[in-house]
Amino acid sequence: MKDKVSSESGDDGFSKQRQKNRSELGGQVSISAQSEEKKDLDSAESKVEKAPSSLPRSSLLRSSLLVSTMTMLSRVLGLARDVVVANYFGAGSAADAFFVAFKIPNFLRRLFAEGAFAQAFVPVLSEYRSQRDLLAVQGLVNRVAGNLGFILLVITVVAVLGAPVLTAVFAPGFYLHAEQQFDLAAHMLAITFPYLMLISLTAFAGAVLNSYEHFAVPAFTPVLLNLCLIGSAIFLSPFFDQPIIALAWGVLMAGVIQLLFQLPFLMRIKLMPIPIVDWQDPGVRRILSLMVPALFGVSVAQINLLLDTVLATFLQTGSVSWLYYSDRLAELPLGVFAIAISTVIMPSLSRKSANKSMQSFAVTLDWALRMIFLIGLPSALALFLLAEPLLVTLFGYGNMNEQDIVMAAKSLRAYSCGLLAFMLIKVLAPGFFARQDMKTPVKIAIQAMVANMIFNLILIFPFAHVGLAAATSMSAFLNAGLLLYGLLKVGVFKWQPGWGLVIFRIFCGCAVLLPAIYFINVDLQQWLAWSMWQRIANMALLVGVGVFSYVAVLLALGLRKKDIIIS
Image 1 (cartoon, rainbow, N blue to C red):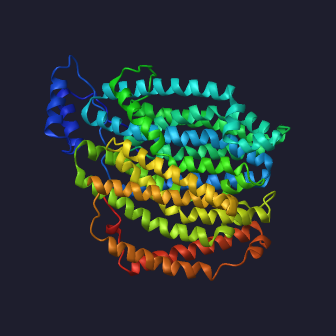
Image 2 (cartoon, rainbow, N blue to C red):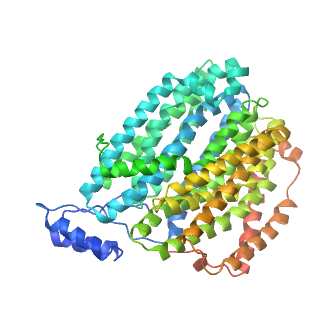
């Protein structure tokens, strides 16, 4: 749905406001909730402005497409960013140092801000929005902003002062075997770490906007990071003795711009936070109680990727960069589709859970799973088949040599084998968090974490960095399988009719997709010999043929718009 930036005003009369609220809620609020609302309103000494109600909801598909479009723009610029970084800095020791310095706050951002915090905050905010007035919602937003900002400030100060210690923990290989690389990474970490505080507050603002169906602004915000890093590499790097330090400053600058960008949109929905530190507020305490287990449960995949980085610092030079570039490509379908779908269904599932609409809850989850299979399987197949061409087209310039392409392609294939599981986790986890069940994902996360460590130790010696990527994929399947089993066991998810036909169509489409792109592809040497524009043209041809063949089969087998739309 389109991201409206205007909100409903509460300036109308008392009775008109009550009638408007009931109309916008569409009859979804229970009788008891309406009675409680009436009691609160009748006892008010003055007119109370109601929290902005849900915008008229179009299909989840339309909302997902909106987020996907914005995310696609961000990912395309992200790939452009990586092309620039690869061209300017390659996959050497300096690049490895930057990726470590950037990965630490970025990992904590995904773990804390976009992971545990968002999954704990959105259900509570949705409940406040459904059952209380705007003043109560504003109070919750103010206190969450104050407490979150205070925690992040303390963490940031400690981390910046202790950057060498933190670098030694996350990159022990640098500390033990590469002193200059370690010093460079620690220096850049002190610059990049404040990004965690800035982007976490940005994620907080985005969670509020998403809860009010304003999806486009938060989805567009990552574009600003990519623009800052591209500009830093091109324009700032010549002014530094160690040019790659310009990227670290680009990260910090991006955090400031991203936060400032979202604030005007919070003002438009009358939820601009005025930070208040209050640890006794019931809403804050509930969010904190939900966050603690969610810190582990929601981001096990990110923890596994970080473990890969830690272990990769003990491997040959370039291993960290090879994993980074392959992970970036694997994250393209993950971010464009899976995270977009997850972003859209989370507020919807939270509302359905709060209103006890569990049949609708199950139908929404089922739709999300169908979309993941429909997109995830062909995406994984395409990444596996086109690993070298994709890497050459995007990164095979300047200091990125043929060996780097070959080694990154190996880990990309390992990640592609787990792509479906990575995507499934993104839509299965909200099934727990929307019901404020954090304990089950934690138990599953611990099991997946232990499995990943075991797989790492088994596979790292014979397969080096490829073994690390394969271990992450294997543990992701375990994680996704246990999440699905947990939802089925408690009865909140039930398979809806038609899955057999869905799987049949997908497999037939993939069966045609595979030979379609395999036989028109050429060997690596030809890709390396081509100019940039030749590579882009041939890659566009491969992607176009693949998408056309897959979609044509789906349509020929009867897939129609009604099969992928849910309101």
